[in-house]
Length: 140
Image (cartoon, rainbow, N blue to C red; front, side, top):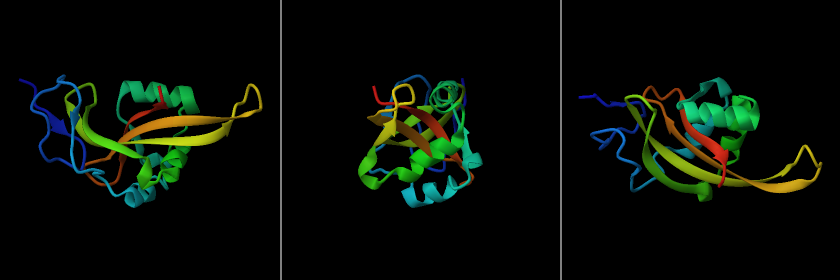
């Protein structure tokens, strides 16, 4: 039997087994957005939690967590989507808040502006000193 380790500060009612799909958490957001923004003032406090997330951030921002921090800094409460338990691909789970944000950005290849929508999913780590990023990608 695999012991599930809760990696997030929020730890109420974690899943009892891995691989059961998304488990929503009611009553979110789980983390105070102002506190999360304060944590990411130092982009080194962002920990990319999953292999997929590492690939997403590399593809979008050449692995620059400073750009991820800027996205988080731009979030507002109205950008909140929901909260759910997320696996790290091993034995850990984190209770995450999901946000979607639209920004107007210049497309490098054309020099024109376009609206881009990002999806972010993150948790505050158990110690309260890290932001665990589970997902950061363009909206599908």
